[in-house]
Length: 101
Image (tube, rainbow, N blue to C red; front, side):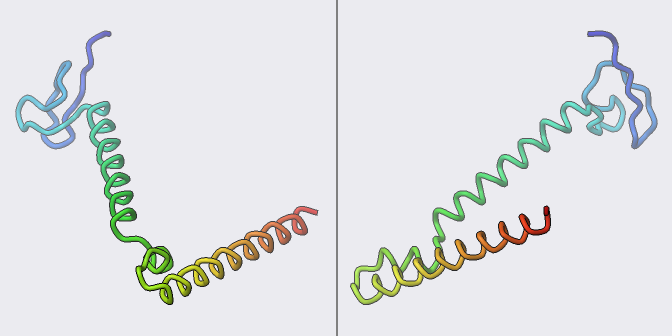
């Protein structure tokens, strides 16, 4: 790899083959910035997955309830949500097919 000459956006100093500015210590490497951003996105996705596991929806909580009455209500609610979602998906597909000709 050749010499990389990067001008610092903060202090306008010319830097050679550095990830950080020699004078103001600002991150100037695009590769490093992309790696940091990718790591932040990955961590955000992990946090969202952990939140989903730790905080299930009402229907999922009711399905696992020890009281049989609440368990039945949970299964009914889950079934209604599933049927309404299937009808909505079918309707969206039908509208798309009609619009496509």
